Image (tube, rainbow, N blue to C red; front, top):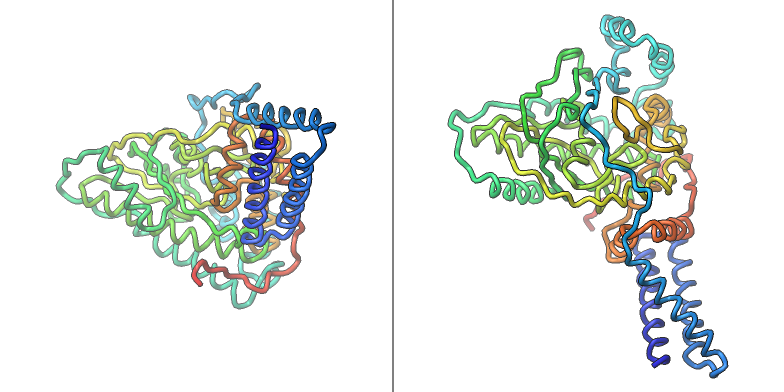
Length: 454
């Protein structure tokens, strides 16, 4: 019986380390591959020794197997003592888009709006002046500027600006009767057909909207249109190999490309709903009346991460979002997220340790706008972006959840979801396999663009 158990453990653990090693090779993670194959070899030696060991070693063998069995059972138990309570969103103060760094950076081109803003927010004048003095995106002075590649992401964001009129439009005169459950199911299939990896539905709350617009001068200071009841949250995944190059020019190229893709899906979705006679408006890059992250969290597809980004339950923070708001009432999505992600963010802190601008806090989840939620120093973060000429993405790159959706990483996500002990072990292994600190390149990679197509 003991021989059979030894053989089973040998095969099981060896298969795991072999799978981990092969996956690491395919993901081009040499450090993880070397350590995985080392574990594969050590594990084989240990259990082969137990298989053929003399009877004097059997008590130790039984003790080790018993320990493994107990550890295995403990790993399946679900417990998170000290778990954070649900966030109280009953009195959240809506966020003003005029306070967003993109809006504040744009003020330098509009002296009258600048005067109005700093009369309202005098405390931001000094730091904004320093940010305004930095080069704009696409400038040769930026660290990761590339004469041929930089105009590509500039072109993508120009395209998004010109596509803003597609976000809204005329509504069909006749309001068609529809089965709302079937319509939501069709919308989910429709969005995935066009390239989304996930889609969620949630009832809109006041704090999901900006209180006032601030991104564009033509609508600066206007109140947002909040005459909608449902948010459709659309998620597209970013390519992990591109984000792994953070904070170089590859990151902003991937970011821009995925903003274009998710904008396309959202705009077509809004048009589709309007054809049934219901108002619908797409919210895409540089064209938001809404805050995508809290709506995405409310839709049950993931959690809020320490770096202030939405953490998708499969792809972690390595995603881009768009919203469609509509007057059509649709059933809320089931909550498929796990609070274990939020608990893991408490202990991990890799994003904070690696943030080159010091924008991400190491301490507990802070309270602002009358609610507890993760947030960063957007001034420090955006200032660094303008220095390097990309949207950095280092926090996304080092996050343990930023991994391909392969079998091995599915197993790890399940393991993390069970309890705090598993999370500590998983974090230790992530640090061991991939490193605690990521070295920051001083130059762009030779291949800035990456394609899934062979």
